Amino acid sequence: MIPLNYLLKFIEEDAPYGDVTSEAIIPEDMEAEAVIIAKQDGVIAGVEEAKVLFEHFGVSVSVKKRDGEEVRAGEVILELKGNARAILLVERTALNIMGRMSGIATETRKLVEKVKRVNPNVKVAGTRKSLLRLIDKKAIMIGGGEPHRFSLSDAILIKDNHLALVPLEEAIRRAKEFSMYKVVEVEVESLEDAIKAAKAGADIIMLDNMKPQEIVRVIEELKRLGLRENIKIEVSGGITPNNIEEYAKLDVDVISLGYLTHSVKNFDVSLEIKRGSSS
Image (cartoon, rainbow, N blue to C red; front, side, top):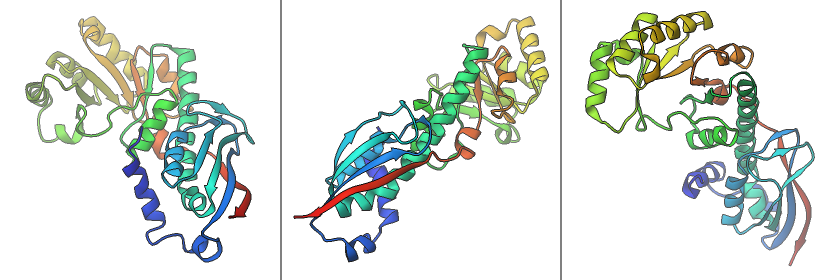
């Protein structure tokens, strides 16, 4: 569950000094009933977050579709009942969260299913190409994908800019000495560096921006040297929904792509007021 204080920051950003429109025209004691509906087919996500936000402001919530369920356009996701001003205060933030998370979950589910049809052993993962980290990572998991690192604190991933400062073998040696509890992953762009990384004891090798034929060559050489069994292979860079199946056919463990968080479209959800009454 995403912490409430994290979610409330979005409300504070949207209404730093209150919702002046509602305060101007909606009676303070007016009650209302509303529904949030799906406007398209897909995988719904962000329901839990929307529920927590509405309930924090005293709105009663009835969940009709749960995170991870597939929905059809027109289906009701949440039913709301409570103070009209409170419903309108939370409306846009809740829809933004649900829209983004559902868009990510829907696209992740599509890609996971596409990959599994080709190779059931390959996992689909996101990346850190996101500022809404907690929301985006949870959405990926709801869609059936792997979140990858949540932050720079989770695991050691030695990238090209690290290697511009420290030689590959030295970087791996230092990383493994730093902590025996942290996974050590290394990003490489050549067969030579992949072999160096495997021999130096990397746990995961990320083959970055390599074409499928180049990846095949790397894996074949690692197998010939007896190194493939000891490592996980991740492929990343230049992977899209259009070519992901080509990578899934290979003997790899993980396919990671920033597309899941930097290019996915929002899922269309809407809040509709059904009735209102003053006490």
